[in-house]
Every structure is written in C-alpha cells, then in structure tokens.
Image (cartoon, rainbow, N blue to C red; front, side):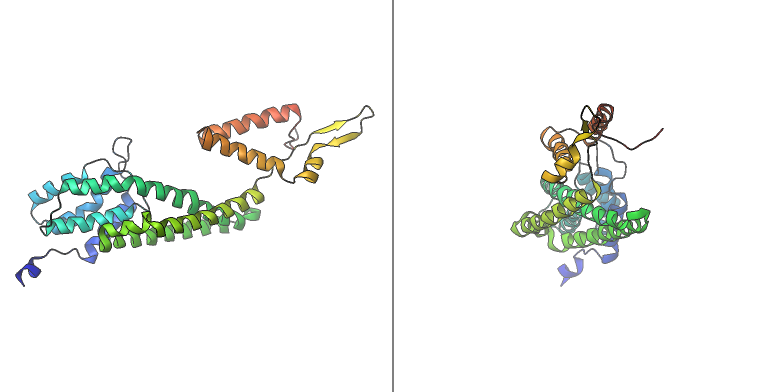
Length: 281
C-alpha cells in the first residue's frame, strides 16, 4: 500500500504541457550542431519538475537530454512520449538511467526520421497541396485556406495522438511504425500519394514546343507539337518530369540547381525557337 502511495505518476496537465512545448518549440535554437536538442530538452522540463521536486535531482536528470537529437518533428513526437514514460519509470526506481534513454533516442530518431520524411513530407503534404491547387483554379483563395486549416489540424491532433500513444505504450508504440503493419500502411499511402502527384502533374504541368518547319514557299510542312500529340500526347511534359527525377534521384542534384537548369534550358529553347513564351514587347 505504501509503495502505491509513493509511486510517481505524470498527470494529464503535465503531459499536455510537455507536448505543447515540443509542438511549438521542436526547432527552438535550431543549429547544425544541436538540431532539435534544445526543443527536446524544453519539452522534458515539465516532466522532470513533476517527477523530481528536488532541484539537484532535476539537474542530474536533465543531463540525459543534452545529447544531439534530430528526427522528423511530426512523427518524432512519439519519441518524446516514450521518453516521458521512461523518465516516469526511472523516477519510480526502475532499472533505467540516462544512458538507456539516450540509447533509445539514438536508435529511434534515424528510422523515425526516414519514415516521417517519406510519409509526411513526401506523401501527405503533396496530397494536400495537390488538392489545394485544384481548389485554387482561377485565383481562388479557397485552396490556400483549405491547406492551412487542414494541415494545422492534422499536425496538431496527429502529433498529440502520437505523444500520448508513445507515453501509454512505451517502446511498443514504435512497433507499429517500423513493423509489418506500419510498412503496409506506408505502402498504401505512398500509392495514393503517387496518384495525386500524377494528377497534379497532368493538370498543372504543360510543356509544349512551338517549332515549325517551313518549306521554300513559306508554308509549314511540319508542326512538331501536332505530330507529338498524335503519337504521344504530353510527351514533352513526361520527358521533362523524368529528367527532373533523374537529376534529383539519380544524380543527387538539389531542387534549386534543378530549377536553375530548367531556366537555362528554357532560355536556350526560346533563343533557338523551340519554345515560345508568348511574350510581346
């Protein structure tokens, strides 16, 4: 009975405070040297103050969170929740120390970052942007408003769910993310993302040529774009898309350099008469 009374337990208010510090300050004092270290440390302050009333104990415990940390800020919220659970267990005398917590963080931040970057940045955001672009036709602000509201709601409630799941399940929470079920879900979402990106490509990217060959009498005997459309409509669009994919995925060219290359190709194409921007001076 006495052991139960002396057991330290984190209340919902403390956990919610910790979550909000991570949600709003995950990238606090962000630098190449520390990345998300200080944001992580800040989110753990309410936890440590609740579990360790003595100031010296708080100082000793906080050293576990001074190590380098960097992961996907959204999906990585589950790690913060797991840490809160581990810290609670440590405060109750379990065989957990700062080294164990650091080993857990170091082991999870890489896989979670890879999953989060592909699932959130590479799939979810393009899907939302694709829907928003479709709603913004004709200059309508509805698409931008839709994206802002939906993204904020997904980011907040999604991260909150992950935080409290991580706390309640401990290290078991990661099993879904990196296990077979998680792989199946990510594969299904990636297929949907590819479909949306393909739809955006077909709707918003249009590459055509204005090249026409004329005979001695001045009449056009070859309209290259018409010939391409009769053989493979949208061939130039597909070619440019695969060219950009080849640059970034195979040659590891950054997005900025890829855009500069496209600008250079466009300028040369206009000078040679292959492209017509339709400008008048």
